[in-house]
Length: 131
Image (cartoon, rainbow, N blue to C red; front, top):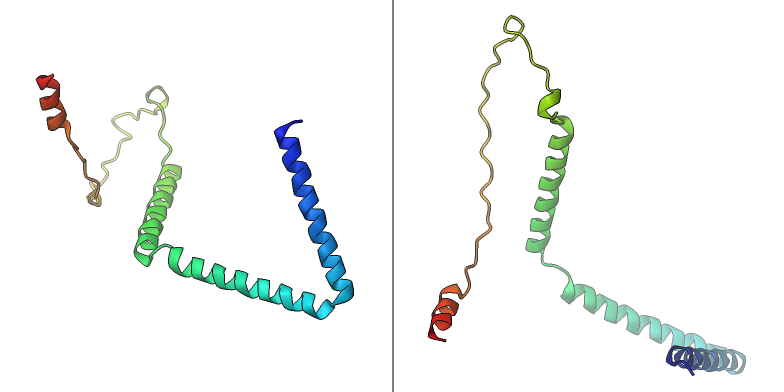
């Protein structure tokens, strides 16, 4: 017998026992069934609340994420505005038609806060030479 098939049979067997138990409780004592279901819902709600309270991201991480999303959207918008043409398709204007355009100052880019971590390269080289 296939292992997957045996687990499927066990799953449906447990599911059918649960359904039989719920039906018998509904027939014999419906108030107790409602009480048990409310207790289960309250316990699940408390567990979910504790999970959301302790495992959610800190506001600092969320602010960094929002800033990164904003930068990504801005870059995408800039790419849409100025589609670049390949060099062989660019229009070359004659000297008489060219106009002098005022030189605009380019804005400073924000500094990148990424650092390179070298690790233990030197130590590895020393160990390599000792072998």
